[in-house]
Length: 207
Image 1 (tube, rainbow, N blue to C red):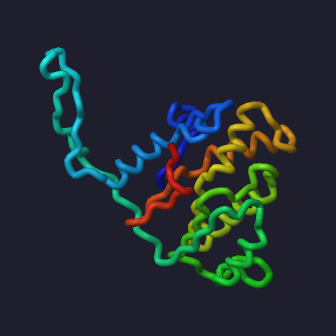
Image 2: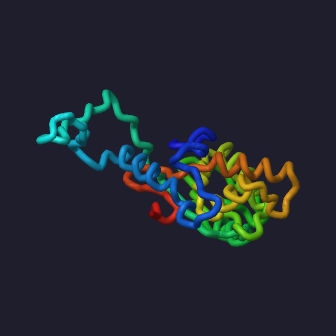
Image 3: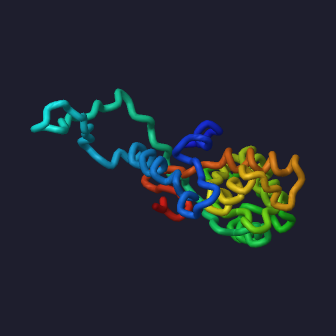
């Protein structure tokens, strides 16, 4: 799994301007670079090297190929994808019941081996973040794993904006403990996830 750690979140790739809206997506260049490396978009990558000769300001040399590329995870036998649910847990539960993942009582059904559940961002509402929604997804992620089902959570712009507010000192209507917990949850989300030929991401990188 390609995960973002706390160091990544504090790097230039993910630093978010507190005063300008365009700065909200300043992390996108880093995302694009990581996606390009993941998919190996160029068969013949080159590196541009500056030179001191005035007639030849740059020299293009082939980049070194990695000794061994990481294996790409196989695409799941069955997947269910959510996005932009914005605090709406009931719709999630109804969809999972319809898919046979949850029983009528809201419990996970039997063996769910080979099934993956994706949420590609905005699982919480940026104007009214609900800790109960986050707790639901965390418990679903833990319980599903015991059944052989993987739940992948990807960051969306709502989570990014909430994280930005927290970093600016806002409480978002929560207590200090909940704010720290929500901050850690958002920093633990994936930027994107690759399975087989499919890239799971919230929208697309914005410039």
